[in-house]
Image 1 (cartoon, helix red, strand yellow):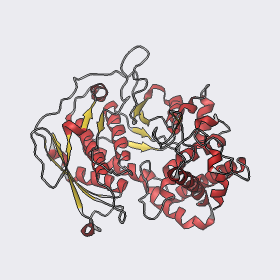
Image 2 (image 1 turned 180 degrees about the vertical axis):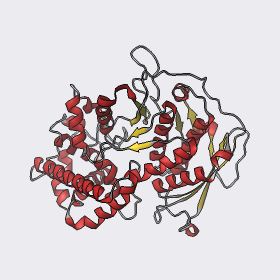
Image 3 (image 1 turned 90 degrees about the horizontal axis):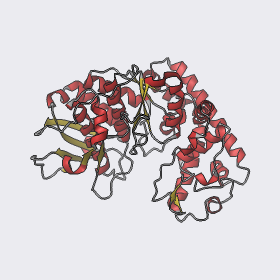
Length: 455
């Protein structure tokens, strides 16, 4: 984004991050490090490894502050962009305020969120409490880290890459759960949980939270820095990387959280901050989610993928008889359904609230015990179908200019010739269109999904 364009008509919102003993201005929104940011001791120790570096702690505070600002300031109905000013205490403000670091940080955050950010750093009054230095031995040299969650792509690509890299691959948890945090011999494993949590007590918070992409990219880069890995493997498949950018409405800024155009900006920031050359790589960018799932399933003996979580909705909105299920209709769930079908696999209908996608009405499609069938659920369902359908339509000749334009911007981020990227992009879109049509055909002529897609 151009940080000077449109600022006169967007009111600046100021956020001050304060520590004990520091007072804030009266016109500022306050993020209290003692009250609003909680560091967890055990996970933080796993990020200490052989180095107790204050800059790592400061980087996490910066990510927390950006996350807080993104949540605390509501977007207006007339304008997506906000102007956000952040003041953050760090141990070495002279380092953080250097033009190379501040500029690359601003470029990454502005490109990701679609906002205007001004971030300045002040001297901390008190040193942060860093865990005792602890070294976690790695049996072999680490080649790559992979951010993982409960998602299907995350688990599948971890399995695919582990088949060739073995212990040279280190997973980095970017969710909130702490699964399998111990090795078989009782030793601690690194990076099994994000070591901090941000609480935002402001009512009517912003829900888009595009800054999650910054948080996950930074946590992954910190892990790569600590284990001296050169590569960060982004596990998302092509539809999840490119689809949210190609398919969007005019009043919503594109979602770049897993896109190479964002990660190349993060690479510049990490290099400036830590003097560390890392590269975010995309081994499945030209594969559909179905192709990724099929390859993973061929490598494992069990249906490990079935316990993965794809749905965006939480327990409050997506439960039946008190048990969480995939909603079955949001864009993420629709992509999961298409991927499972394309891979030649199946899962129990009760994995979803919407159990029968061949039904002619939404009322007949959902589990009869589901109690939240309302306008919001219906809107999610229609939007999920249309997202898949519109992405398939971009494979048509009518969208040629849009595809060519995207290839022009994507090629430099991947450091590949434009014509090569254009051909790969066209092939990916055609594969998605084919998988989507095959899935629609499998539902029969009366399916509500097919009716919405036609509309």
